[in-house]
Length: 113
Length: 114
Image (cartoon, each protein chain N blue to C red):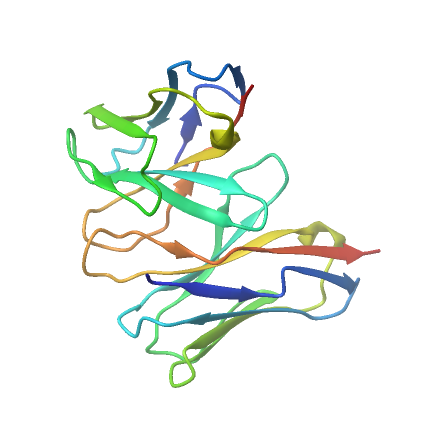
């Protein structure tokens, strides 16, 4: 079964610190790696995504780092804010096929004031 | 803005009841998905559909069925609800078949089976 392994399960970071969430995948056919953010009572929403032709993508305070040879990718949140407190899911997919996403199990991030 | 709506935010049913969860999207998306979300297990795909009347099993289809009679509407059916189906159910849609795009999620239905 295709898997995406996400760690840590939970994370507490002080305001202004860097939050780092890691994911590893097995299927080398994956070619799309999004991160979703979910606030309590809401559905997940796309935060940022990367394709394997680049090693890094940055959008504001959020950066994805991608290591194709290690089959790993990570989300870095710079200058973490209490408003970033949410659950984060990494995912992976293949462009060929049915466009389904395989999700990691999620990381609950708490940014303390 | 893409909008995915789910018929209920909270639902309480009894064991053995037939349960319908409805999802509607307003952006003419081809793909629609049903997930369940459980603490520590993440999002697990139940069923998805890439066209009207078409459906494909996801990772955990047992105990569920789906219906897509119109492009904008995708229903999840629990034929005989059981307590282990107590969960948060999330519907999502994405634009194009065969192409990976952003999935847009509804707010979820928290189902409790007593």
